[in-house]
Image (cartoon, rainbow, N blue to C red):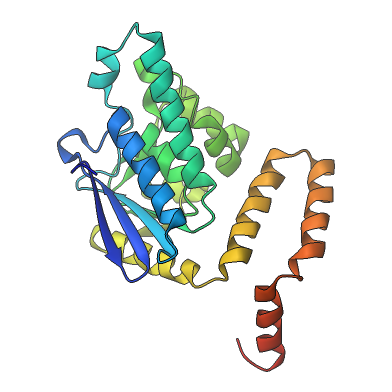
Length: 253
């Protein structure tokens, strides 16, 4: 792994830091592929209970590195490869069976805001700005749309995507884009704390809850009702569920 993505293990939490501070941690094709691979390894490593994604100060992520985009303008094959790599990485994070927490220590714009929106929980610096300014650059923010619309609804997604405006941290929280706003120097600490809390949940039930929740968003109402009934009827059969219920009935947590 190159220096553009740094890792740190804190107990059972793997922290990944995008490390291109001179470019506000903008995505190159290489960085996208490395983060995708890092998350894959974190999912497969039994010693990793949760993951945190952050950025080297002063930003979280500024989206695509437009210098690299400009170099490949007119190259349809390369442009498609970059888009597919970004989508694959977003899907890896979004569908990870383990907790993934975003420590948004600075501005998260364009693809950076998209990455943030694929995480299970988002802690943001009160100084951060968040938004999707692609339209101002003649770009369509297509890959981020499904994640954004699920979180904030059609009206707010339309506003953000068609105006390209940036929200401050508190506006982003009110819109449903983030969970917590924290002082800049405590963002990573709080994100790790949340990750450790989520990692303490029974792994199989966490993964299944997340999977079904995503399925509900993807299905129409009738289909989702049948899906959740089926899963709910089976969820009590797992060994983890039996042990947890037994502890509760015995007076434990």
